[in-house]
Image (cartoon, rainbow, N blue to C red; front, side, top):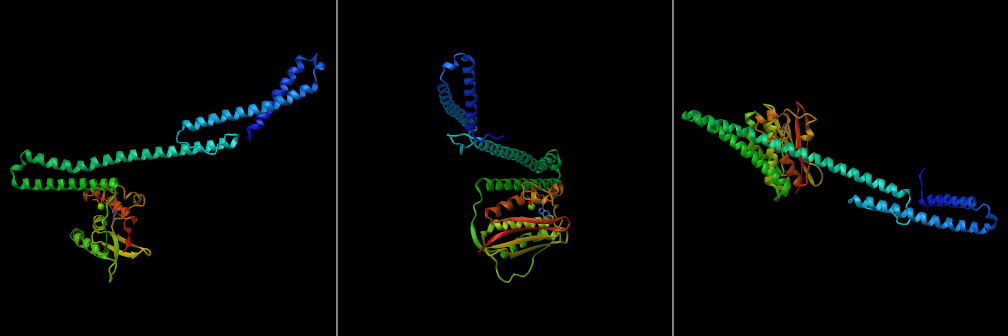
Length: 346
Ligand SMILES: Nc1ncnc2c1ncn2[C@@H]1O[C@H](COP(=O)(O)OP(=O)(O)OP(=O)(O)O)[C@@H](O)[C@H]1O
Ligand SMILES: [Mg+2]
C-alpha cells in the first residue's frame, strides 16, 4: 500500500492515541464517571485529537525533511529538487530514489570510463616500449658485433653501420610520430587553412610514392579524367600527409600487381568526398572499428616487417577531425579496402 500523505498517518495515530486515553480514563475513573461531564470528555477528546494530529504531522514532516536533507547533503553532487518543506509525501521518496539511482548510474559510468582510460594507458605504454625495443636492440646488436671485432672488416663494418643507421631512422620516425600525436591530442591541431586544388595534391602524392608502388608493381591512378580542378578549403600540407598515409597503406597492404584508385566526388552542396581504394588484402569486419586506434595493427608481425608502427591512421583521423570532417573505411578480406574522407568545398 502506498501511503500518499503522512497527514493520514498522523490522523490515524492521533485517533488511536485519543481512543487509548479515553479507554484509560473510563477504566480508571469508572466509579466516578457519572460525576464527570460526558460532554466535557467529548470536548477534551476532540481538542486532543486535533492537537495531536497537528503536532504529529508536523513532527513527522520535520523529521523526514531532516533525514532527506541529510542524504542530499552527504551525497554532495546530488542536487536537491522539488522537495516541499510543507508536506512530505511518498512522491518525495520517489524523487529521492530516482535521484539516487541517476547518481549511481553516473558514478558507474565514471568508473568504467576511468577503467577504460587506465587500460588504455597501460596498453599505450606497453606498445611504446615494445615499438622502441625492436629497433633499439637491432642497433645494440650491430654495435656490439662491431665492437667485438667485426669492425676490422671494412665490408662488414659498412654493412652493419648502414643497418644500424636504418634502425635509428626507424626509431626517430616512431618518436616523431608519437611526438606529433601527443601534440595533436594536447594542443589540438593548428591548421593553416587555404584554398587549393585537391587533384594536384593527389597527383603530387602519386609522384612521391611512385617508386614504392613500382616495387610491388602497383598502379596508382585517379578513377577518371578530371577536366576541371576541385578546389577545397583545408590545410594543404596536412592533407598531403593524410593522402600519403592512405596511399602508402594501400601499397603496403596491397597485392603485387594491384591498383590503388583515388576518386573525388560531390558528397553534398558543401562537401567533397575523397576515396582511396585498393584491391589488396583487406581487413576483417572485427578489426575495422579499431583501425584508427593508436598502435593498432591487424597482422602485427607482417605490419612490423613493413616497418609500420600503427600510428599512421590515428594521425590521419586527428587531422581530418581537426578539419571538422569525417573519415571511415569499408573493407572485405581478400578483396580490398576503401578509406574515404570528406573535405569542405572552396
Ligand atoms: N589499405 C589497407 N588494407 C589493409 N589493411 C590496412 C590498410 N590500411 C591499414 N591497414 C591495417 O591497419 C593497420 C593500421 O594502419 P596504420 O597506417 O595506422 O599503421 P601502419 O601502416 O601499420 O604503420 P604506420 O602507418 O604508422 O607506419 C595496419 O597495420 C594494417 O593492418
Ligand atoms: Mg600506415
